[in-house]
Image 1 (tube, rainbow, N blue to C red):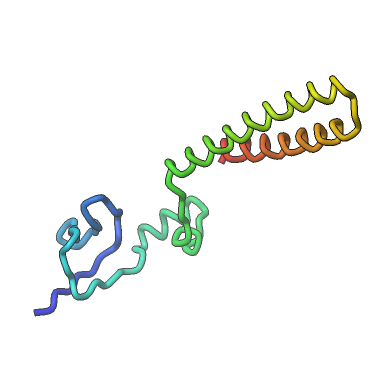
Image 2: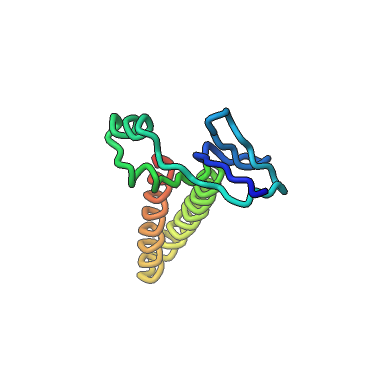
Length: 128
């Protein structure tokens, strides 16, 4: 006998996919097989919910928010980059002040520009 269910995806968990069905929630657990799953369109209620917030259906379907953990990893990486560049700028400033050569001054200007770019990237990641 073929088993067919009609579902709307609610969420994914460690145990499997959870779906609402007319009889309540249905969960497909890891290792369980279902030969056919019919994905239902958004309900009128859900469409109204998005419309009230000014979100089009295409936007609602297309939203893919990155995991918060990945965001935090990116921010930590950018913070480490800014810290390293800050130390580099301090060392180059000391060297440029000590000998006053044009090469050291040019290298310092480049390092300061790189630091500014890294700081902007960090600020953008923290506000996203």
